[in-house]
Amino acid sequence: MFGSPTDNTRASTIAFILAFIASAILFISDRGSERLLLRTQTNAEAVTSPGLAMLSKPLRGAESLVAEFKDRSRALEENKSLREELYALREDKQRAELIEMKLRRFEEILGADSGLDIPAQKIAARAVSEIEGPFVRSALINAGRKQGLKKGHPVMTVEGLYGHILRAGPKASRVLLLGDLNSRISVMSMRSSARAILSGDNSDLPRLAFVDDRADWADGDKVITSGDDGVMPAGLPIGVVKEQAPRDFVVELYSSQKNNDWVWVYPYEPIVLSEATEDDLPDSDQVTAADGPDEVQPETLESQTLVPQPGTP
Amino acid sequence: MVMRGSSQTYGKGGVWKGAAFLFLLVLISVLNINLAGRTIAFIFIPLMGVCLWPRTDNAIMSILVITLMGLFLDLLSAGPLGLWALIFLAVFGVFRPHMRSKPHSFKSAFTLWIMALFMALTASFFLGWFALGSRPEITALVYQALAALVLFPLIYAIRHLGRYILTDPDLRGM
Image (cartoon, each protein chain N blue to C red):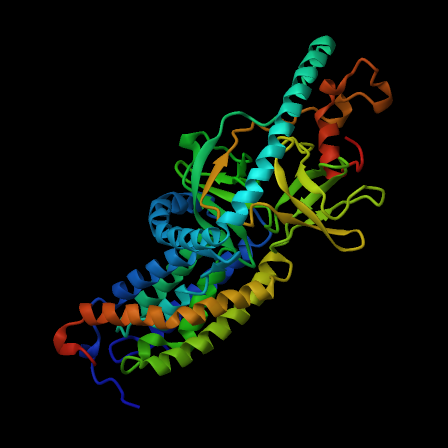
């Protein structure tokens, strides 16, 4: 089958069959299980990320060139609309500062802290390789554990949430994008606070799953992270809801609208579940009024993630 | 069909030249470009390295290198492990590029490429379905195959140029 005048036909045929069987075994073993060769994969990503960064430069340059031409063609029009937006934002900023001042005062009176979960620190990185294929939607960024990145950290673009860290190697990390089949993010509507799970399906428009019949979701709603899963901070912008069919919602992601070259990572520490079993926890009717929102048990948080309570803040 | 008379018509270090070319294509395949709001990916491009594999007398090494490159692509693309190794081997087994008696003309290489691409498209669809448990998006696969089809003349020209530079002047055209 694979012979040539100088080759042993039988040996090459056997080599081919063995290679095919080995690949098939790897393929079947990898299906539906934890990733095989995880360390090899992390190392391969770490080794190739500088090369990929170099190779991606001309591509990003070409993208910028096209984008620049496009921007220049509508510069005047855009300038006008930006000026109008700036005037509106100045007014909004003043209002926001006033509200912030009032909120701080109320917090002092009540002894509560309703501050944002979003960390102030940002770790910048470059998306050196982005795969948006039919099998997987992920990206490789050129920052890793040495820069302080950990599994689960949210990754942002200037537009909005991009994904979260799936694997952090020493110098490179793999990011699971929001559209990936395995991506599940706890989200809410900015307008109604209705909850859902943003579920990727390897398409450009991830779906809203676990949407309750009474949940107030509508076309055009802005979607942000709810923080209910304890993995992501609340309030990260994600996209806009689009109703494809009655009660069938998809989300147009902010991050997929532009080229993603530079990203940043929020070193957000997720809420760690305690080792406590169900038996150790008090029954729900035994929880007294003194148990405030700060004392919610981890299991309660988990149940909120799996079955979101639509319409509740 | 002209049959090869002896191994002397093979280029020296054919396997390693093929491996270097395939490695470069694997790296390119995990990059993508966003033009006019559409992301263009090149996941099928490494298959060109298999289709245009150099004529070499070392079939076992060729098989080994192609399998490893397939697995390397699986690792880099974070896709199902073994998927591309299987597709590379299937294409290599069917088209047997190392058995060619003389270098391809552009026309014959392009015809071969269309057939290989169709085969890889079908295989990746069904293998991907099996691995993921849900049907892969066929339009994304077709777009990627179209991008690979359009880029074939460019890759072919680069390979041809490289081959011309690296081949001993006395053996050119053999």
